[in-house]
Image 1: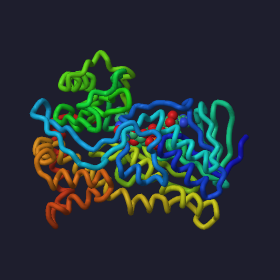
Image 2: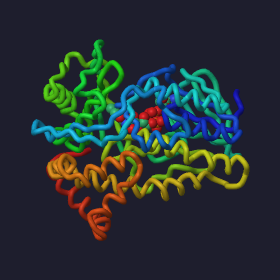
Image 3: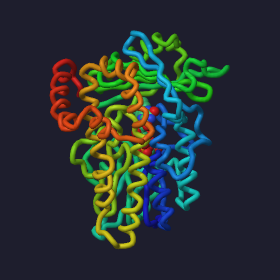
Image 4: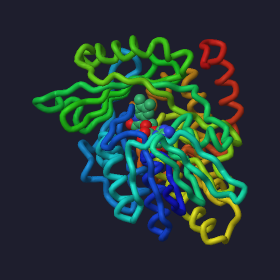
Length: 395
Ligand SMILES: Cc1cc2nc3c(=O)[nH]c(=O)nc-3n(C[C@H](O)[C@H](O)[C@H](O)COP(=O)(O)OP(=O)(O)OC[C@H]3O[C@@H](n4cnc5c(N)ncnc54)[C@H](O)[C@@H]3O)c2cc1C
């Protein structure tokens, strides 16, 4: 049995960031993942500038394209390309990004063991933990659940599971001769076909990633057809799509507990995916970073629980998350005016770019429309939700 200060279960961006931050403080950390690394996972692999800036090092070694422009279109209507003239999103492959982030955790002293499926987690009366894998068991004072949607840590320790109201389907098309220039340096976004979501084309080194995502019950059954249509719209061969995979996007429920005595959940395990954009890497990096100081305080006996981590997120991220959820409801009643504004109104496009870069938040953006707009957000979202619930079943 290994005996360490902290076990982090799951070596995605949330887990490796938590492991790195905790190990940097001098604690012994065991980072476990069920997959053999490097491993891929269903994800567009887009890391926003805001997300990348959370890290104290550059992710350049694993960046395959830098997005500065967006091609935006409502269904099959006229496409408009806007240029931010500065980086918005870094395109990576998860197999490379996640292995790179694990290396950074190892450099700080975390021990990484892959191919280790955690099957059970138990907390003893003295508040320490036993973490079981198929190969044995480990003992620790702290356990961090970074094991994604429906993770075993949250499940065994009694955390409420995040909602699974959104799903996405994605795959790759390889271009041995290089990605066509029409896709390089740009995100291609198509709105209006998938209830509660959108379709995308993301450029990578020698391939593009194509995907569609939306509300589970309304979009789930039509995702394959929607991806076929997306390919047709952009002159791509659906039969050339490889590695087609679907996955849930966990969404946090209001009031969810993310920390207790000696344990916490981060990233997708805490349902922190941004409701409007569907991106979760930023929140995984943010929560992985935020949990480390609380773990250090707990190990040093300065606090009795990791509640400080939850308080940090409640202060610094969850209000934004709620604003994003409200905007998602409003956007999806009728994406047309919002897509038009992104395409044609300079300040609207600039605001979106500044948000992706982390210069402003969703909340700042809602204030731009006037002093009452922020307070109208909640009620407008409620009405929007009612309208869409009547139109579509969302699960
Ligand atoms: C189709 C799709 C496209 C997406 N595109 C983007 C995008 O372009 N940009 C973006 O920001 N977000 C995107 N997301 C969301 C993003 O993928 C997640 O939010 C992000 O991966 C969350 O990181 P994480 O570290 O919390 O969890 P994960 O990356 O899911 O990592 C969890 C890890 O835990 C391991 N694990 C699970 N169970 C166990 C167990 N029992 N024992 C041991 N290990 C275990 C897994 O193997 C995995 O490595 C997308 C999601 C989907 C589904």
